[in-house]
Length: 590
Image (cartoon, rainbow, N blue to C red; front, side, top):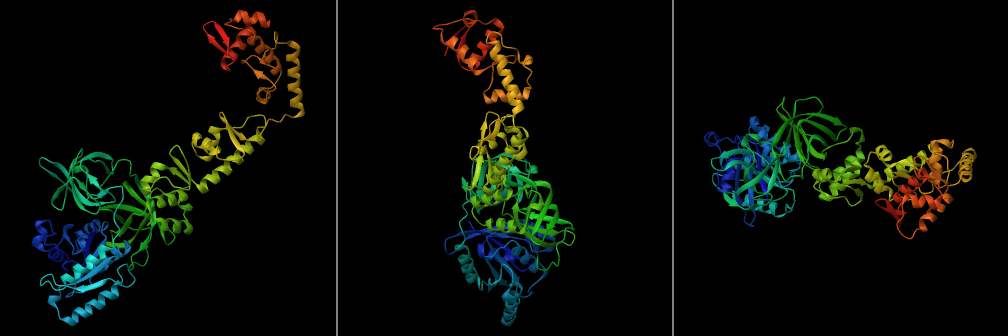
């Protein structure tokens, strides 16, 4: 359902005009109706001639209630800007225009109200004045329609203009329902009820939701929209949600409802920024409030160049890439700027440059998957869950994914180069070792070992063997001195024979060189104490092959001519390597 929001100076006839259009009184509070002044948000609805049902959000125009006004404009699709013919352009007219311009609300119509109170020539002058003020803003070129809510003059023309504006609106078809709460109260026998404009997805009775901040789980007990009980409410509708699992004191204006796992809270984000046209300079110093959704929060800002701002909040809220926001200087009581969220969880600010601002900005109005792709390309790597929470998108197309982590194509290539370089450097420093440990390699590139192993499987020239990563072309290369030591050990083993090989501690070989010789296949280790030549291993395995049935340790040592201290370690090695199968005290050849 399209949402039409009013804007304009106090007492210019916004609520009266909405009542004339819809037949419903948008002011909810007795004080508002008695004073003829909108203090808080008001709501009404109607069917346009083209058959489209629309909601109206009527906002206060008094400068004291600008916070309430900002709580209602985030969800609007079409602006109904109101200027009274008998007063003309006023201070809140300018500030409300700034808000709509900063939020880039480019579908709008201007109602020049109270024309029954002035002469026709003053209507013409007021029209020219409005056109001048709209120049250079998102509302430039909007139709200006003289109307009188009292006599009904121009109302049909205004309705036709609204009908035309909403007819071309794209359909809201998101899958992540989001409700910024603007009211919460309790009803006897029903419990907590919250209200707001539903965005980006539908809600149904029985749905499980969470509130943010705080991530309290709740359930939808009942739904009401436009004074009707409903089982399901589509995006764009004003809705009252009766929920269980939370007290009204735990939610307030600015809280948000969404589905579990679809949103992530942040206390810092980076976005584009643009100053209101009446502001000379927007600096880091100031008592700023962020207005996003229906909420308002004190923030600190830091500018990076002309277009970028980092916003730090005192409490975490749920934002997503593309969200629009307004900054208000509470000291000056003035809207001073606004923009859109680029990265809800930014890396170091130094990584932002103009090229990346352009790329991320270009993706803001694209599809959710395109936003996910752009944000991943900027971040380089991210969890799929967080990336989806920040964009609404799925796994990016141009990415390497493993274990719930995605790497952009750029980061994948960069990490691949770092892996190759680390492996080659390791081989240079440790020529006798089989390669760098995968865990050590993973830590050096900032990824999980499983992700590194999966990534290496896609790279040419490197491989993983067990717990080690190495170059595919790598082989242990011994110096003449090292080869001489290994040959000396082999000679001693040959001379001793299988029945009397020396213990490792008696061979006089460095442990690193021994392990390298074992990996190279020159020696085979059967236990911590004994190594054999490959030919000696073959000789002993041939003895095992000679047994037709089960055999014991004594049978083997007698046939092999070994003492028990050699026979037992060798048979245990044969068990471990699958040459034999042990059952109790006997073994069989496999």
